[in-house]
Image (cartoon, rainbow, N blue to C red; front, side, top):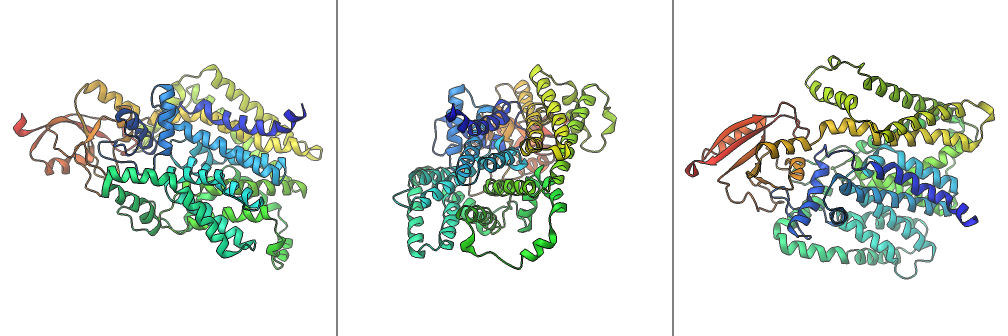
Amino acid sequence: MNHLKQNLPLLAVVAITSLMLLPFLGLTDFNTKGEPREAVVALSMLKDGNWILPVNNGCDIPYKPPFFHFCIALFSLLSGSVSEYTSRLPSALSFVAMTTGVFVFYRRRTTTATAFLATVLLATSFEVHRYANNCRVDMMLTAFTIGSLLLFYKWREQGSRGIPVLAVLCMSGAVMTKGPVGFILPCFVMVTFSLLRGDRPLQTLLRYALVALLSCLIPAAWYIAAWQQGGDQFLSLVYEENIGRMTGTMSYESHEHAFTYNFFTLFTGWVPWTLLMMFSLLALPWRKIKGMAATRPKLSAISDIKLFTWLSFLLVLFFYCLPSSKRSVYLLPCYPFMAVLMAQYIQWLWATRRRGCLRVYVYVIASLSLLLTVAYVTVRMGLVPDGIFHGKHAAENIAMLHSLRDGELPLWSLLLIVLQTAVCIDALQLAARGKKDIQRPLLYAVTAPVVTLMIVLDGVYLPAILNSKSLRPMAQLIEKTFPGEPLYQYIDDKMMHFFGADFYLNDSMAQFETPQRSIGVSTAGSKAPERGVLVVPEGDFAALEKRHPEYTFTHVMTTERRMAEVKGCVSFYRFALKHAE
């Protein structure tokens, strides 16, 4: 009984993070280019049997190492097909494993309350939650990176004896997920931490150089096998995606921003907790803080765990400020350590009786959640007319409105809405108790409305909204209109294809023109097709037709709605070589 009571917080962490994600992974179709681009790699692995360097979308080799795609393929083998659910499952399980590891690690080195609150903050931050639900490699990379850092810290606590096998395996997994950054980042943080703690510089550098080398053994086997298949084109891809991205010498623009962009994305990535941080600024003793700033604490006075937490957050942020290519998702390894710091800050607000900002936050979040429910009920009752939407995006907005209004509402969805409403009302009355509050009820009131809001968004609202932008209908239109005909695609952007349609058509769309770049493999598309069906954005066809006078093109149809991938309408042509007619 005592053992169960002791592990109840751990079970709660696993249950909360699992229930927030796993039931809803398959409710939403692919609606952006990124998810099907990754899923189709696993699809081509199973379809063609090439698990080293599969070719997909008619010409591409994967831009990242294959461990994430291996996982999708294995889950899909068990379920019978590659689906949205099996494609997102590796990210979701990586997130559950990461939050559980963070909880266990910090529970032993801080308090159970701090660790539990940190995992709830982490699970409900917008950026982390978004990628935990996504078929992208980044959440798995983050889980491996965080795992290696926590295991390295534990290894150092034990005297750095022997080889940290689990940490090395985590770094190997990270490298096999996204490349060399998987060992560079953990070693960079740990070397800096060790040197600041007075470890011998040469011994420290040699120690982490050795573990970095060990972590590359498994990935090296794949890189050699992939190079044997892909040759110079594969080496060019590896160079561009790793060295070129860091040095800003890529052959194409890739999310180039100033270093201030990273701070903005952290600010927005922590929504809705950004609101609480902003409210708390009004409660801080600014005069005392100004006086304390003049007396800096000595480094030796800072505990190991506090220094490790701050360094992990700040060094990851610094590392990703260096390359010109910047994306919000790169900063995911910052979030677990920021969550711990924010949890300690919230507990400090409580302990110093600065609880007004906590109550204000509960009032705002719970009220907004209830207003969202009212808005949804209003839409379901048909009280929102189509005429409120105008402009070029009116059709898309009307489609979202109709999806929310007319979509199925199963009993379990209704129960989720009722649960969210009850939790928000309960949180409001707890926050209004004034001086009679107790710590646990108020912290429940702070966190529970956000947890239930995330669940209702994923289980009810977002599937209805995002499925109105699904990439599946275009594939269904192609199957219905051109059954059995050879399919070719063209987009006047060397980095773009019809990823969603190709995934839903079982990776059957070849390239009409093989992109002229050094990071692809020419398979389908290397030989000029004689006849078939061309799928092309409406605005890209004229230039293509002018370049190919050897073909006759017959227009079949153009979609009325804009397609999400190309942000425009798509045209369909039957074509044939003139001498083949």
